[in-house]
Length: 287
Ligand SMILES: Cc1cc2nc3c(=O)[nH]c(=O)nc-3n(C[C@H](O)[C@H](O)[C@H](O)COP(=O)(O)OP(=O)(O)OC[C@H]3O[C@@H](n4cnc5c(N)ncnc54)[C@H](O)[C@@H]3O)c2cc1C
Image (cartoon, rainbow, N blue to C red; front, side, top):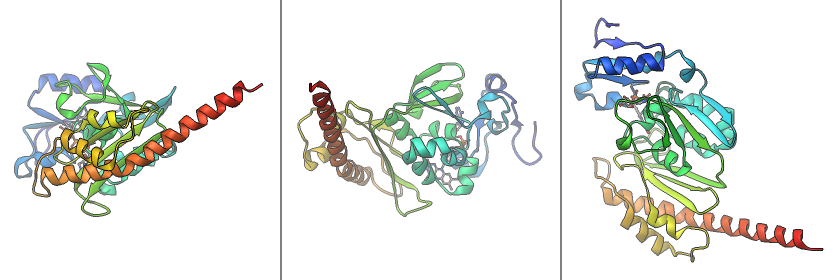
């Protein structure tokens, strides 16, 4: 349990053991890949003790991705790279595979996990899960709507993420400073599951959140909104913070351009679907 040159590391075999260790050692930090947690350690020094979730051997850790009726179930303990390379994810949600591919580098993704990303305030996947309307399964709290990290149940462990496959169109876009291995300026997620477009932002210092004011402009049947109106709605609704990389205002400006840029394609696709549905009901009704 105790490592020669570092803090004590507890190594649970099961989620139940990990929960018991959390209760018994409240100052110990659970880590999976520790790739995000270590970014917050002062002077790179680990906290008093760690609970290593990467060594879980029970079923929760076993299968990175499995199919269920209407969706995919992703293990929170799966590495980012195993989810990115999974054939079902690449086929059903290529935008998610691509977004994961924009996180860190391959060595980071081989250590970093889905749960670590979603429980870390800056994770690029948090807005994606909000817009995909995923459900989170916690060890104690059970199944809940996808949450921003600040709203996670305290002292609980995220075990699974259930992602519905009902989306007609999905855009998940991380904007960074360069093509690869870039810190995040902002991550935008837009998903149309048939009633309108769910829009979420996050990544970097931007707290992950949905933008209901923008979604109402993109609801099916809403009058067409101009680029200017959409951008103003993003500016009015989005919360963003400054950091050394960019100001909050710059992040909002980038997000407003990305969202308004994709909006027209969402509206066109919805119109085409509506036309196709009306054609098929007309022809079905013909004698
Ligand atoms: C060089 C570098 C580049 C990076 N680039 C990016 C990037 O572009 N985008 C990005 O989003 N991230 C980036 N990261 C951060 C990180 O690699 C990813 O977010 C990764 O997915 C975190 O997973 P992890 O398993 O390492 O999390 P950890 O560091 O182990 O954990 C992160 C937090 O989540 C908690 N946690 C972990 N698992 C669970 C669980 N199952 N239940 C409850 N709480 C849990 C931990 O207690 C901790 O507070 C980068 C990191 C590095 C070092």
